[in-house]
Image (cartoon, rainbow, N blue to C red):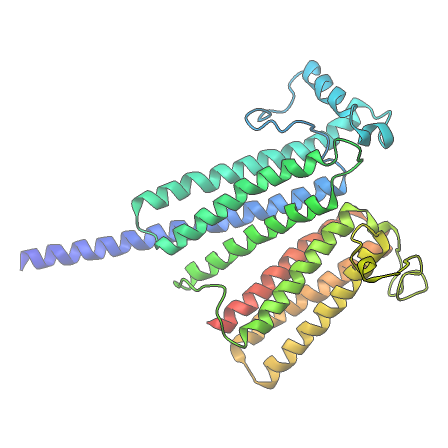
Length: 354
């Protein structure tokens, strides 16, 4: 009898301990999610302020502290003065003006390091105590790999703007942003799984799911086109809406063959694609909404309403960013809202399969 009582107490203690570990794991994922979210915001502002090339060395194991004396500041500034961005755009910039763009890039890099360490160290702890489902741990190692890869891609992107260019390659910028959105999406999916005490796979081969996969795909495509638009400063070409100047299709684009439709260096064409993918996303979401209400799918109504609010906010911010002459605050809000739109679509799909 005594042994039975001790065994029950032990079982109850272990269950309570396991619950606390999962709660800690859940909180860790939420904090990681928030840190990556802030990272995307800071990264967007770093791009919008043209600050990304202010630090011309990778400084993988150095650069943790900002410059602490005039000599160090002069060294960083002299390196910046050697690149095309300074010589062609910012020539004559004072060191005080340089400090402003320097700190944007500095905080971007420091935050990246913090995210890496904050994700690595607790993950090792959760791995070795062996209380978390191995599937969750494996996915977290995938996230960690993407975070490390993101750092490498970040420097690969910066190098494209140090020689013969005044800004970074828009292809590399889109890769950098795309990976950031992928990291956020995977963490978000894991948070939803932990919250519901499940381990659902994202890819499930069921007919209805493909309608949601297509939605997530076109939103991700729009994010990539948005990065192209930002990297090329293509938003400066046409700043009118709904027409591009006085035309639906830009009159400065010459199409002489199929390959011209894939000229992703053409500023006007990129803006045209970005606008029209936005129209496609809007129509597609409304169609999904029509079927949700037609079939009276109660579990999808609330996440759909949230998706719809984010969609219209994103449309508003996109138009206002354009007609305001690319106001930096509106542009930043537009990028943040694109991430919320992606997560809202994933959330809608999650409710579809649960």
